[in-house]
Image (cartoon, rainbow, N blue to C red; front, side):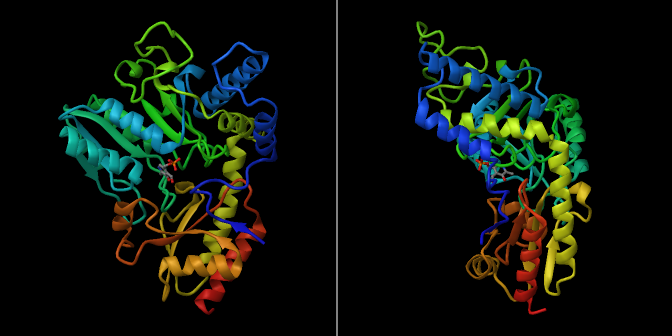
Length: 384
Ligand SMILES: Cc1ncc(COP(=O)(O)O)c(C=O)c1O
C-alpha cells in the first residue's frame, strides 16, 4: 500500500491520460519540436500549441505566446530574476520564499550588487503588507512574492501586493509553484507582470516541465538567459525578440510537454474550482483530525480559505526526519520532513531550530481513506 501525501514536492499519481500520452509519444513519434517539416513534426507542433493554449487559459494569460515552457519552477524563477535585475537594482521579497527565489537573489546581491529587502511574516506564514509598503521605494525594480507557501500552504494577498508594487513603479513577480492547478489564477486580474510555476505539481504534468507567464510589454525588459537554436529565424545569429522563441532555446522537453498537455486537458474537463473544492475537503479532514491528536502541533493558517492543501506539523518527542521515516517504513505513508527549501519561512514559524516540520500535502487524487490512514498512523506515533 502506498499513500502519497507529498504533492507539494511533485504530484502523484498523474491522470492516466498523461501516462498514455507520454508513452504514445515516446514509442510512436519521438521527433523534436519545431525542427522539421514531417507529418509527425506537424502533429507534435499541434500538441505543443494546444498545451500552450491550455496553459494560457489555466493562468488567465492574454494569449498563448505569453506562456513560455521551462524545465521546472526554479528555471522560470531564475529567468525572471536574472533577466530583470541589473547591477544596483533594489528588490523586495519575503521570508516565506523558497530557495528558488532566495538563492538567485543572494547571487544577484553578491555578483551584481543588487539590494534585497525581505519583508517578514507572522506565525501563520502571512506576509506583512505594511512592511511591503514601507520597503518599496522609487528605486525598487521588482517585488517577488510567493503565491502560497510550500511549508504552511498560506495564501498571500497577491492583488494587494501587486498594487503596492505598481504604485511604487516596480514590476511584480509571483512564484505560483504551489498554486497553479490548485487555485484559480487570473494573472490579468491579479496584476501580475511575470509568473513562474512548475508543470509537474498542481498542473499534473510530468517532472521536467514548468511555465512562465510574461505580461505584454515586459519582454522588452526581460533578458533571455539562454540563447540558441529556436527552429525559427535561423539565418540570423541574434536571438529572436518574438515570444515565445526569445526564451525557448534548444530542444524542448517534448515528452514532458505532451504529458502536460494531457494533464491540462484533464484539469480543464474538471475545472480548477472543483479540484480546489476536493483538496479543501481533504485538507479540512486532515486538519480537523490533526487537531484531535495530543502532541501534534499545527503550523499555518487557521482557516481553509487561507491555505492550500499543504499542512505542516511538529510532533512532541519526534525529530521531523525520524517521524517521516517511520511513516514511510511502517505505514507506507510518504510525506516530506525538514526545511522544504524555505529556511526563512521556518525561522518565521519558529520551527528552524527543531529541524523544520513534517509536511503532508494533498492533491487531486488524495482520497478520504488516505487521510484516515495518515491520521491513524500519527495517532499511533503520538501514543494516543
Ligand atoms: C514555493 C515553491 N517555489 C518554487 C519551487 C521550485 O519548483 P521546481 O521544483 O519545479 O523547480 C517549489 C518546489 O518545491 C516551491 O514549492
